[in-house]
Amino acid sequence: MDIFSAGFLNYLIALGTMSGIYAVLCLGLNLQWGFAGLFNAGIAAFFAIGAYAAAILTTPESPNHLGGFGLPVVAAWPVAMLLSGALAWAIGRICLKVQGDYLAMATIGIAEVIRLVIKNEEWLTAGTRGISNIARPFEALPTPWNALAFLGLVAALVAGIYWAAERAWASPWGRALRAIRDSDVAAAAIGKDVTQFRLEAFVLGAMVMALAGALSAHYFKFLGTTATEPMMVTFLVWVMLIVGGSGNNRGAILGAALIWVIWSATELLTNRLPGEWITRTSYIRVLLIGLLLQIVLQRFGKGLLPERPPRMIDDRPKSG
Amino acid sequence: MAALSDFINLYLLPGLVVGCIYALGAIGISLLFGILRFAHFAHGDMMTLGAYLAIIFTASLGWSPYAALPIAVVGTAIVALALDRAFYKPFRRSAGIVTVIASFGVMLMLRSAIQLIWGVDVKTYDIGIRFPMEFGMLKIAPRQVTIVLVTAALVVALHLFLSRTRLGKAMRAVSDDPDLARVSGINVEQVVRWTWIIGAGLAAAGGVFIGIQTKVHPNMGWDLLLPLFAAAVLGGIGRPYGAVAGGLAIGLCQELATYPWFSDQPFVAPGYKPAVAFSVMVIMLIWRPTGLFRGRVF
Image (cartoon, rainbow over all chains, first blue to last red; front, side):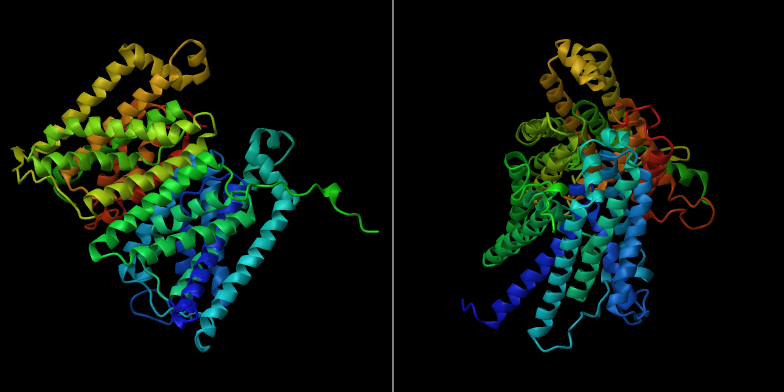
């Protein structure tokens, strides 16, 4: 294989872009699970809301679905994030008091309901036909610069969210969240509003997930019901965060990149197999991903990059 | 508005049958939550597994699914014990939520294994067309009677087990207070094993009933998960009898919600049946998180 060929370069760019989108998702989940210990089993719901909001707001008018708003991409993303945040707020208000497994059940429920809405409300989402003609930023540039520029945009967003998440991790807000995560009773006893902090982390995480959804809609330029597939969104992101190291923002990014590279590289391998085997091996890949999750959980419970407490405030070098 | 006979034959009876199937799954979720303190996300896939194990015998040996049912139940219980040993036991002493993540992984593995072995096509048991029995305006299919009766028998058996046998009483003790149970000499691991056997066995029976009632496909476990959880929450988590009532209630709610109550159109479009289960769950979480039967909230 000629590693300098255009095809290989495109493959690398695609690999990087997808890793970046998954990294955004992972950082969002880390805000909820790593920071606050909130189990979100419905990542797909917030991802889908972001994706569909961005697609509907930016596409030209179409008889197949709601649209014709013609918003510029940068204006649609905040709206997408706000919508997802509002949904998370509603769910959080109901479920965060009773925590733990209940939140997991409720988020699975909301993901299923969103999936049903997308499938059934054709006037809104075009159902299984999907939304096409979604604009991708920089697509007017010549190849490969258009793809590279989009990769750059994704990378910049990952960097920005990483920076903000790191700041949050060291901030009093992040410390309070970790205290609540490790013992909500103790945190409540020193006067922290446990439900409020959890709600904030949950809403923020959901907004970041919506951004990932919007990015993927613009990247693929097409959005169908497969975008809400629990396997490709919810499970894969959980595996990424657990493998990378929950509670560690760098771990979230590393896990996203690593698992995505494994996932797509194995696809490259299995696609060379004879026809009948291709479908079969795709299940073997899922099986192995599940097994990988179990092994990491049991043997390396903290992931590749374990959580580290931020530096104590007193340790900072004094200036002057 | 449709005629009363349609209401009974097309909404009430199917709701009852679906409710029985949900009850069989929800009992396991509720028992496991009571004993092991975690929401078992792979429980729907246990039902799928039961349904597919029965297919081995109906497809190759031409058995009736009712004859294959006991084997499916035993097979699923064995698989559940093996899965517990490999993937859940290492987390007995850690926080429940880690076990939930592990059950996420098990769900993934079970489903892909089923897809690998049996493929992704929809399958049926080939029981042929049986004409419904008519009692006046009632039209009841024989399989509906069987499903309801077998479920009732299983629930009675479960009740006798929990209330009369030593093991059943130990199980309730562990559910109430695991530490107290342990210091009073109850073999907690034995209780856990029997919880898996009962929970997975009942789930497998429910899965076979789904196959008898409609069809079998690898993703059905995922579709079942939401109504099962809703049933367990409605009945009060950790309360097996509550799970039976919750399952019946969710099944009936889902079917009756599609009845044209106020106009010629279904009140809730049939495509939104799972959303009914979700609504019931949300209402319970707001109004009474302990469930109708005063389960516990962790």
